[in-house]
Length: 233
Image 1 (cartoon, rainbow, N blue to C red):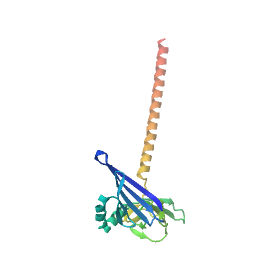
Image 2 (cartoon, rainbow, N blue to C red):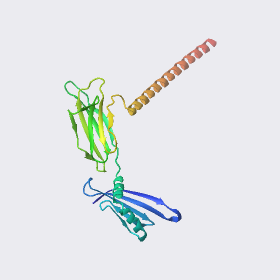
Image 3 (cartoon, helix red, strand yellow):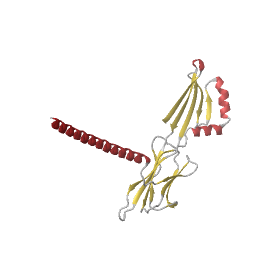
Image 4 (cartoon, rainbow, N blue to C red):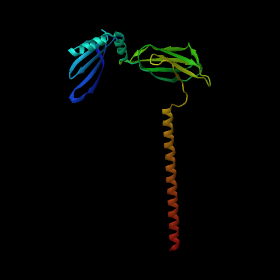
């Protein structure tokens, strides 16, 4: 039995009393077999414990028995709350070019989807809003080892001017398909870097030009002053 994750939430009460809720997530053999344990403690004493495998609340003190009985009368609610402990996580998606077309060799795009949960997911390529069913290869859902998954899909194609290519991701974390378009222009980050770099170059040129003008003016003034002195004497 492997302890995969744990979360400790602490809250303080008046007169020095305190309590905390310990939430444990355990992987029993595989990521598809998960056990959730809630432990409610008060002043260093465990009051209640819920085990998702048994779908039951156990009481550890006399005055916690009534609470446990009330919870155990709502098994569906307990199961629903346990499912919430592992929230659906919306994936991070990137669509980019990994190979340009050359002669008879097609270009290649990759749609990479990271950090999603649960595992089931569907990726679809769209070309001008029409599904692409050929020249598409995809990996299986790959476990990251931290509860989350990743998947990658490749599309080979010969580009056409003005066309729109999109990667459509369908996952439980979203009520509708998530559409990610291939953007041939600079990304916002790259654009900011470009603007910053260009501004730096312009500023450097201005400073250099200003320095040159200052040097020329000073050198000219010095020559005039020297010439005037010679005439004076």
